[in-house]
Image (spheres, one colour):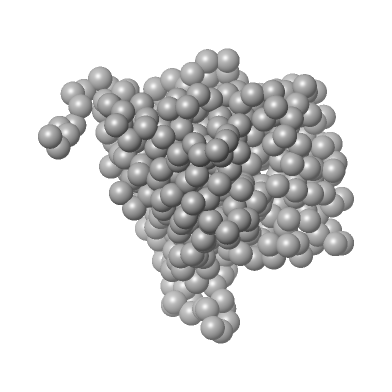
Length: 395
């Protein structure tokens, strides 16, 4: 496991941290620290302007190959990028689904024409993407998707429903996992991965209000929505492989940036505990120490996983990542409320203006559900990492 950075890496850290210091001020000072979990609606236009600024200065697509316009930075420098961004309290990225999921998928599985068409909009920060995976009857069981796509007159015509679609209300495009062969056995054999424009008459977006009062995700209904025949990534009925590839890209170097955001939250909890005297309580001190230890374990396991996986598929150590951080973060939300005490029960303002820690506490309740619930994660670990018998499936 490589936990040290070279002089070149540290020079890169200095370059990027200086860029952040220079630019998260003036016009963009207002977006600093905004747009994170539970706060996704905050200052969207201003954050989109920030995204375009990052694109103009070459800070989007840092891991993309140079031949498509990226910077092809090393894994260490990608880690530094995400850590410094979080350390500087950079705003929630409105383009993260395009850069982190769709972009690498098109680069790996897409045609040359698709790369030329879709990658530039991601690199410039202009085009916003969302992910059309989950459905009411296909959450963790993605192979059960029912949204249909039929080829009619040189266009794919889509009908169906997606749910929990993050950022759908402001997205330009959606990558949709849909069924193109309803009779295929097993089910995952009849699935395709299709790119669909969101701004058309056949797409209806219905925001879902969360406990935080925001509507970060939505239901999306496709009613004869259309997209060009060539907007399929990979082969017809070969979308399962592509969609699983997208999920692999989700667990990359940005994990370290997420942990830096957690570090910021823990620092705020410690500051408040010192301020209100909760740090003098031995039980509370132990819980804070446990939280700190858990965060360090996350970092070392992420570095171990990334180092082991460089140029290869992630190993077994990567399989514990999601269940560990999700459970830890949910507990951190509870710790935050216990440190705040009665203050945690009172909104900052009317009608429902929450503090950052209050939003974190509410949003963290979903961490153990989305992107594979804790129950699903335990099955993955038991079956794929430990080689235990598969859980009985309904006949």
